[in-house]
Length: 439
Image (spheres, rainbow, N blue to C red):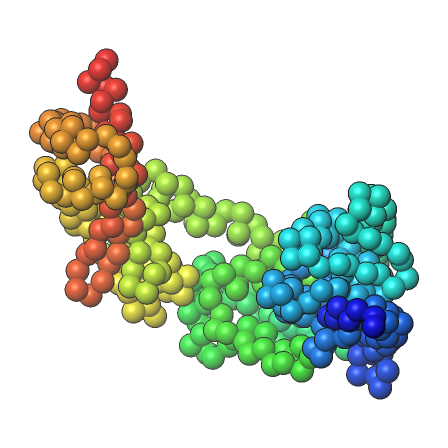
């Protein structure tokens, strides 16, 4: 009697890069699967049997491993449910040499054989691996050439002023892959330019537009998904004012070209607006804020995780500093639920927390334990407590540096202020103090 033939479980994997024509009765995935099934049937005498699951990736690039069917295939391989992976061509599995090397590593670890119907490979031999890597190198080269060809075509199309897709700007609709003026939205764009010339402030203009109920572009994607517009804020206004499409131009990598579409804004209006933008008070206020001491810049947050940024105002020659949520700066203070908080009071509270850390052995020990350093806690406590009385003698700049070294995050909540300490910052401070003492 003949010995029984060992059953070999075969998974047929198929892939196409585009989802076009996948709705046809017999598409490319079906053709690949049919060829794979025929090959498995031809090896039936060797005990080959197809598994019941289908592993089809339609509309996924071979340059990435982020494909649902491929992930499911790898999961089944790791689970020991597959012995052979069958594909029509090796580039169906991957077009990246590095990615394919990762797949082969998984195959070897799980003792899974890889078979290409149109190319004969045995991945268990060094010669088979060499041949496979050479072919994969050409597959990756082909993919990169295709990418370069697409980028060159995109650049050439933009140079001819063509619209290359994406979200259409406010004031235009897309008809037959061309920008067509939407008169109602175009009038809103002209209003934004005219009002900015008179108001000179994007924040005030944004408040006007929101009170009038104006929003950003509402549009429908090619897949039929509706994208609703949002209330216009300062950022949206600056984006509109800087979009050269309204001059009738198409821009590619900073270079403008005459566009196929009609302009909405004339050159004279554009130049006046950008002359104001070049001398806008925002630049001066940013410079003033940069020069103003802000102890908690970058580490202060309001409830909900919204960042707070330093701001200031002058009354009767006196400077008043605040921390304000970025939403208030973008949309206006009147419309933001988070009001500005006096900078001096908040900073004093945080400094008090830091001084409490430097003067309390229990806090030092707990913070040091989080840092997981091997230096004895007793030595750390001694070094820091010896330094604490010298705090008031430090220059303000040095105090600010230590605060930012020890404080990770400051959160403003209705119940009060919460200070999160930085354990690794204490470690750095201790090292600095020990070096200073040794010197």
